[in-house]
Length: 115
Length: 114
Image (cartoon, rainbow over all chains, first blue to last red; front, side):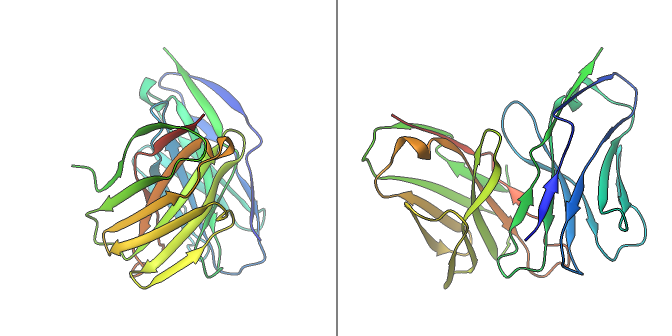
């Protein structure tokens, strides 16, 4: 079974600054995928970035980057140059090797960007 | 146009009623999923389907049923709705042809059972 832990319930960040959202995971699978999703107040789940367990390079996607430290089992999301539109809930998720390919989600971190 | 659509977007129903939530996708993905989101509990998998003839129960399937009418359509039914099925429901899709199997979510359906 997989477990995802996000220890920061809420964070405030100043506009144009960077913010790091923590995510640690626990799994016995050798092959797995790590994902971050954004959920604005409107409710939809927006895919941001993916990191495979065998990827040697940290994933980047525009202003989003994933700081993957496999030995520490962490997959922190870094948002650079924060914008007001980045205010949302952010979820870390993991897909292991189980047959259902389900995603296991963390509890989420609420980010509020201040002008 | 959105790649994954869900109807209705909001629904209020009464205990004991049968309701259906529908999901359609134009992404050409073969795999589809239904999740529910409850505050503080994250998303939990209800059912999943890897193709039209393949339907599987997730971790919280009791009280729900599904139908995969076509590769692009996956419906979730609540046979007799109860108040603790009040939640935000998401449909998601993924492509088995990619190594990462990223799941893309629909906009969600907010369901309130009175």
